[in-house]
Amino acid sequence: MIDLLYSLLLKYDSESSRYLDLFQEIQIGSKVKLLEDGNKFKNIYFVKKGCLRLSFDNNGVDVTYQFFFDNQVVSGFLDDDESIFTLESLEPTTLIVIKKNDFDRLIQEIPELKDQFLTFLLQRVANYSKLFLSRIKDSPQIRYQRLLKENPHILQRVPQHYIASYLGITPVSLSRIRKRKE
Image 1 (cartoon, rainbow, N blue to C red):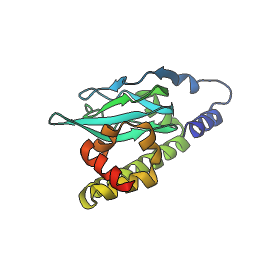
Image 2: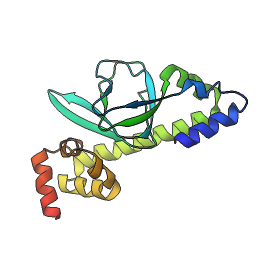
Image 3: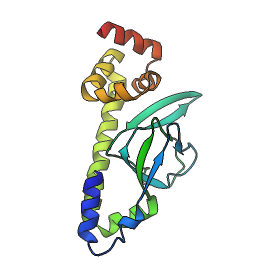
Image 4: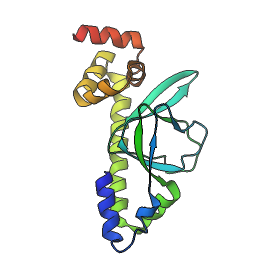
């Protein structure tokens, strides 16, 4: 995604760095909060390398909603409401950051970028729908097996208690499922 973004920007701005100057590369350590629940999402993040976790508080219980890894995009919702999510790094992470209002201007000025971003958003909605339906219809064992099949890197890079939260189960239940699998 990052390479595609740069190629589109260079196509529209080959003479100067007008668009590229809107982006900043930053490096953060683990456990850095980029967004806290109740604040507005002011930036779009492109994960160059690392891992981010999107979570929310459910009556005092920390629930993992999504993980973001290398070459993935993290964006807020299209409105300017306060976020119900917290976004934090789980490991040292390198990000490409653009302010949300600058990105909004970019997608208005570059139709191909707008099309790519719309495709990305539609894919994200489809993924969230699958996750939501899986929580309703699938057992924890099936959810774990699907995660193992479709995203094995999560199991290698994310602490077990966050994986359990993402699957909608307790860490103890996840341990039992993993033992049955061995």
